[in-house]
Length: 328
Image (cartoon, rainbow, N blue to C red):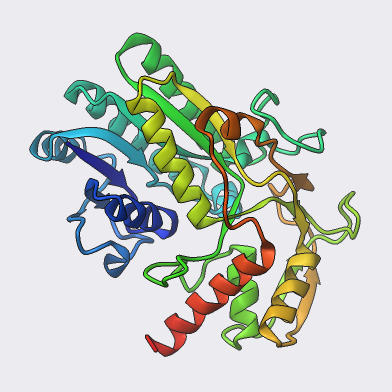
């Protein structure tokens, strides 16, 4: 039996593929390589280049590989881009997920783990956001993911499909063995941008918004190491395989750092100073969003092992150096 990983050539997907392969799971990857990379996919996992909205291709893949579970990462994920291109985001994220879910149900797939986002919460008033917080997305990106969550819930009620939705907070870092990492040169993730600035790959960096109602005026986020996210996905699949009920769970650490704190940490760890320019707020950015993680720790017995900002930054720096200089 095989696990289909959509978007498995991307940042998070490639780490999960590597984690599954490390556990001797049979994996097939579907990715259109619009933002993913061929060489990010573990050699043991065949890569099929195609679109998650291609229902004929999906039907063939699910049958040929005897797929029993799907991990769905394929999506567009840049909040400001979603504001300027909502049609593209609803087409790729929501319509693509609908095609995938329909094909999975038709093929008799029983388990699906979905890559969602804390962006579904919008700008919550609570200091810690639980899964019971009413979703109020501030961007088409967040709404496209929430619409998929709703669709999965309704489909599960009408079929044999069981799912786990994982709402990611801010994912960062890289595989400690440097087998994969965040390879997109133009990625907008804060830690990626900051380490590029530290290595001289960018002419400094920008902070968007310094007047938020936070301790230092910059946005506060809950940063989770990508490898802890990998273990959450694998434990979510184990939960479903063991007969567990469908669930929606936050993936974070339960504490946050401001943009300025992250920038200062990157400067200290890298031993490099770099220029930082302040700009106006970007549309769609909430002031502060930090996860309440009681549910995932209880239901999946999930215990993160990389809950340390310095470790996250060190791994991100090591990966960026590898991209710049090649293997040692």
